[in-house]
Amino acid sequence: MRPGRVPIRALTLAALVLVAVVEVFPYVWMVSTSLKDMAGVTRFPPTLWPSEPQWQNYAKAWASGPFLRYAVNNAIQTLGILVCQLFFGCLAGFAFSKLRWNGRDACFLIVIACLIVPPQVRFVPLYMLFSVVYHWNDFFWPLVMTTSEAVRTLPIGVAMLREEGTGDRWHVIMAGSMFVVAPVLAVFIVAQRHIIRAFTFTSLK
Image (cartoon, rainbow, N blue to C red; front, side):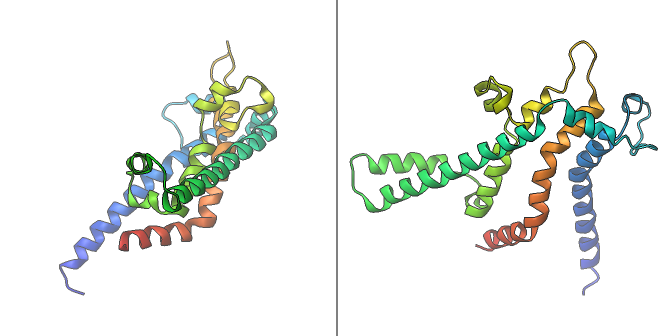
């Protein structure tokens, strides 16, 4: 290895470590906050990890609403949207490739214009993964479209953990937020090799 390449590798490694810390730290802080009491949340200077983790915060968050129902609703919403995307995408692909009809080229150009996204997103498995994560974390449309607790999703449930008149229970809210984040992190951990392989493949293309 040439001597001139050593500083470059060291700088690259340092940059990667810095990016990793920046990306991971919010999750570490979320877990840390979820295990503090209210005094620990508001303490200054803040501590990275509580001396006595308050695991009961997760029980409080879980008991504050039907979070199992919220999780089921989240799964139904995400899988339903994913199935619809695949179904109508296949129908559109067949119509554009096999059928001849007036306005086909114009409609095709509109579809292509809507798909002007980075190559990684055009790679179908990654696109579907990003789609799942997006719809799992979606807050706006479930908030607008749902009026009953029986059909609310996890992000809505976490937002409802804020108590009116008693301030924000950030330790409990962070515990509830972990109910939303944990499944996504689990999927990423299980599929990380395939994700890295897909990114590598698309970058080589």
